[in-house]
Image (cartoon, rainbow, N blue to C red; front, top):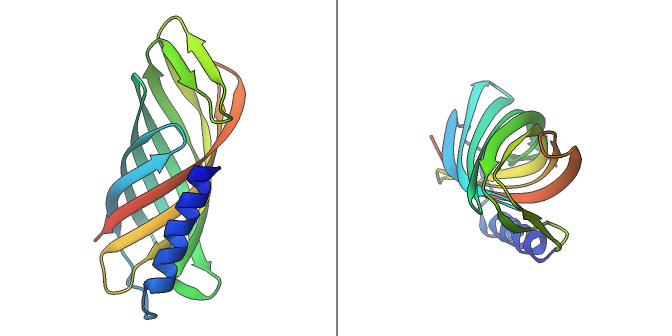
Amino acid sequence: MKKLIFCSSILITFLLISRQSMAQDYKTAVGLKFGGYENGLSVKYFPVNGISLEGILGFRNNGVVITGLYEINQEAFGVPELKFYYGAGAHIGAEGSGTYQTFDGGNQTYAASRILLGVDGVIGLEYRIPNAPIAVSLDLNPRLELATGPFVDIAPGLGIKYTF
């Protein structure tokens, strides 16, 4: 919960200190994604207006996860710089044995390495800072883990991207 409040505070701060101007559309963005389970590198690409493809290479304790998302983007609250996006995708990865803290604060221990495979969703807001090549996003990522489950979880995500 503290992480979600912190992420929300950062997004609101960017919204309040930025000057009002017309948004500059971008075709590609690369940056960092900080999530509830993985932190890593992100690439977002717009093949057509309003549709984006996002790839995330996330690192977690003793593991790595690759996530691909198809996202629909549209203006939010009448602010051209602020985009609402939602979509779906999938992930695949692996993690080693060990004890992991779950998002609800509990611990889970795995005696052996395991494969991660599942379906992902995303819903969030992205703000492109006017006159700067920077975009900040805040989202929720529900996930259905199939290989080690099935179970469902949800985690917040904060993204900071360089746009071009």
